[in-house]
Image 1 (cartoon, rainbow, N blue to C red):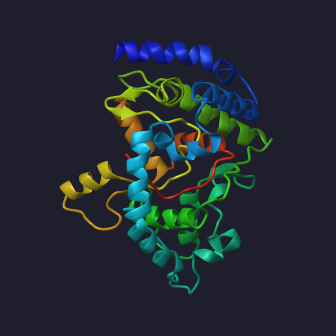
Image 2: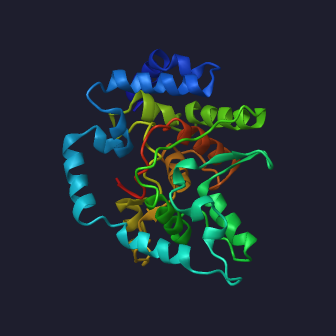
Length: 292
C-alpha cells in the first residue's frame, strides 16, 4: 500500500503538474486529456465513457454481454419513467420544471445558477421540482431519486456532456473548490481522488481496476453488484436495489480511504461534481450504467 501511494504521488507530480497549478478550467481539461492520451495511447477518447471497460479487454467483453442481453438496470429505468410521468397532486409533472420537458437534458447538469450563486445538480433540480409542486423531496442517494435521474439520463444517451464554467467569480470559486477536493489527500490512507483515477488509472487497488477521471460521470446513476448484495443482505430487493447516484459513490469512495464522508448534495460534493462533470466534456452520456 505504501509503495502504491509513493508511485501514485510521484506519477502525479510529474504527469499532472500543469493541472495542480492555478490554471483556467479549459487548461485543466486540455492537460488531463493530454495526460490520458499519453498514458493510454491505444484507447480512443470517446471510449473513456465506458470507464474501466475501456481499459481491459476481458472485463469489457463480460460487461458488454450484460449490457447487450440482460442489463440489470432496465427495470429501474421503467420505475423512473413511471415516476417521472406520474402527475403531482396539483396536476403538474416533472416536465413542467425542466427545459424540453426534462427529456434529453442530462448532459447540461450540473450548471451554475447566477440568481442563487449556486451550482445545481440534476438530483437537486429533481427535488426542487418536487418542492415547488408541493411534493415531499426524495432521499438523495438511491431509491426513486436514483430511478428518476436514471430515466432522465437514459433519455440523454448519446448527448455530449457540455458543462459550462461561468466567468462569474462565484462559479469559478466552486469549480476551484471541486478541483481542490479532487486532488487533496484525505483519510487514514491519505489518498486523493487523483491518486486512484489519474496517477494510478489502469492500475489495481484491492483487486479493483482503477478507471480514468474523464468519463467516470457519464453513466450515473449506476447499478452496482456491490450495492445489490448490500441491499439483499438487509432483506431489500427489487429493481432499485443496486442503483445509486454519483454522490452516493463519492461517499463510498471517502469511506474506502477511511475518511468521513460528506452528506450527499453538500457544498463539498456538489463542487466536486461540478469539476468532475466538466472534465468529461466531450464524452457521451450513457446513463444508467453497470459498474463493478
